[in-house]
Length: 446
Ligand SMILES: NC(=O)C1=CN([C@@H]2O[C@H](COP(=O)(O)OP(=O)(O)OC[C@H]3O[C@@H](n4cnc5c(N)ncnc54)[C@H](O)[C@@H]3O)[C@@H](O)[C@H]2O)C=CC1
Ligand SMILES: O=C(O)CCC(=O)C(=O)O
Image 1 (cartoon, protein in one colour):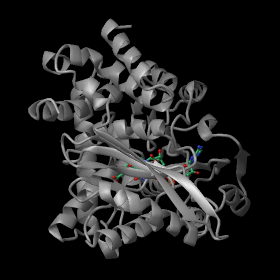
Image 2 (cartoon, helix red, strand yellow; image 1 turned 30 degrees about the vertical axis):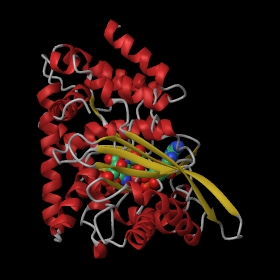
Image 3 (cartoon, helix red, strand yellow; image 1 turned 90 degrees about the vertical axis):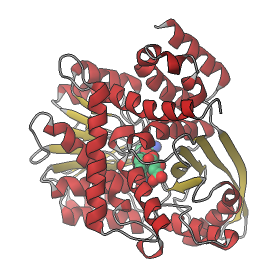
Image 4 (cartoon, helix red, strand yellow; image 1 turned 120 degrees about the vertical axis):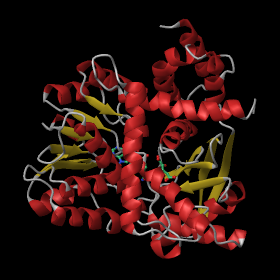
């Protein structure tokens, strides 16, 4: 291994013990861009990467709340304000029992590159809590959100830090968080994105990550004069990203074979159509039920405790969570003829899995490029809020498509190899890095 990279990574490990997800995310980026940084003394000598891995600020706070039985519950809240070189901190909030500082630092670090790739003026942040909305009443979720925002409100603002949703944070949670912010701050402004259409939200934000993912896959396939029409697609997850990725696949004539949740996956060889997808949306968004019920309702197979990667497909979309697709899964995908893996989730493929895709030279699109449509439309929501204006659904969709096209162009600029293979990982990392690094250089040692 390169000696500078070795030293950088061993210092990082020393400074951040017990943070495996954060170390994994940084190692992935550092390994792919080290030779580029070494070829550019202005980045190397000013220790830009060493500065980028240090959050500008981390806020950790107590979140006490009363459950429906009148018992006191205590959770931990976080906001990682990672980098503000190109704009105010921007990134989602995750409410899930697996949330730790390490998970949020990895997500905030990825957000630096992703937000830069969108071309919009957004810095990077991420936050959340180990609170689990699953199994809680609406009243309990509201109490928790109000307590969470009672501390968070002093650290966020439309020009400083603009959170949004992520796992476990959807319309309901954003509503409760916004209501409490407005009450305490006494100001109706664009402090959160993912708001309802009637109260400052943007059209297409709910759909944006999933739709953007499929627009990106289309861009990839276009490089081989192909399209998604007629392709078979396997998807993990059944939340926001998975639902709208499936919807766009169906609209564009692809056949979606699987969806999953944390308990297992369903395999529908006839394909999930619009009617079946409507059932899933209701099941997951309103009933908070298990994906298993899909199999019972539509008479197909359900695999408890398994992930869908062994199902033969043209395209695989990991859309649930980090490290959900490992080396063995990657080998199976390649063996079964998969031509493209595009990440709707953040860091769903382990480093070993990514290495297999790159070696086999199949298309591999990292989340920071492929799922950037969500935060991009959040950026458009911020613009609309600043203008006190609202674009139509068609206008926002057109802008989303154009942003995904531009991200693809940027990946090609730095990722195209001598034999024509596009290394999207390298392309996305270098392109995302350059814009932020140049802004940091221009702003001095801060
Ligand atoms: N919502 C957004 O706009 C964006 C989300 N993402 C990423 O997409 C992924 C999914 O997020 P959303 O769909 O928004 O969340 P969600 O809360 O709507 O859905 C999460 C899905 O992942 C599954 N899941 C969660 N933990 C799991 C685990 N440990 N094992 C297996 N399945 C698990 C859930 O069952 C659910 O189907 C996350 O990695 C998130 O960071 C990325 C960019 C934007
Ligand atoms: O829209 C946003 O600000 C959040 C998006 C997000 O958290 C992500 O891109 O992972």
